[in-house]
Image 1 (cartoon, helix red, strand yellow):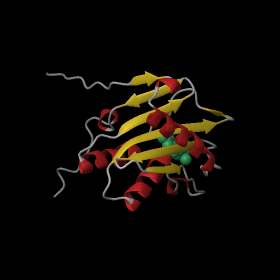
Image 2: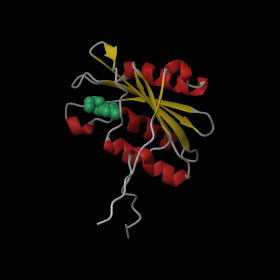
Image 3: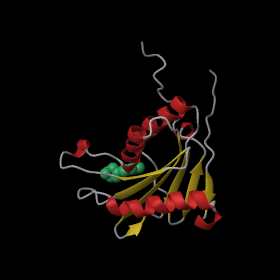
Image 4: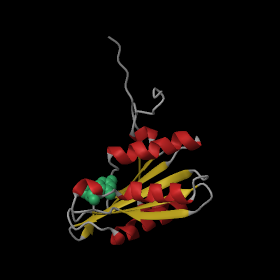
Length: 159
Ligand code: THU
């Protein structure tokens, strides 16, 4: 038997320790929680995505009475960016969540489907996407989506 360990490095910042650029992205994600349509979960998620050329895209989770029809904030913003700027690599995404009258204390973390979707862009553009996860206790910064989804399915075995 052999064994190996895959580890993930997470940096934990206070808001004022972030660069101005990162702080802006987090602030955009916080603002975008207000545009969430989440009458079923009451969990308002905002996301902001920075492209390599500096452009920002913004999104929030959008729910539906037929629950699986809804979409997370991360894929909402990511797909919008891909559709509008397919030639430009995404380089950073910030996520925030607001529920029960407050932002979450713990940084909110993207679901597996969003990790899968965003990770494919890292492969496609050969550029890591930095991930900024906001909570009132601080901001987790992860240097790539791959770090959040090791042993991913990358489609390389598809015919
Ligand atoms: N949600 C997101 O938008 N992003 C996440 O990272 C976690 C979950 C949404 C999906 C659904 O609208 C609500 O939050 C509750 O799961």
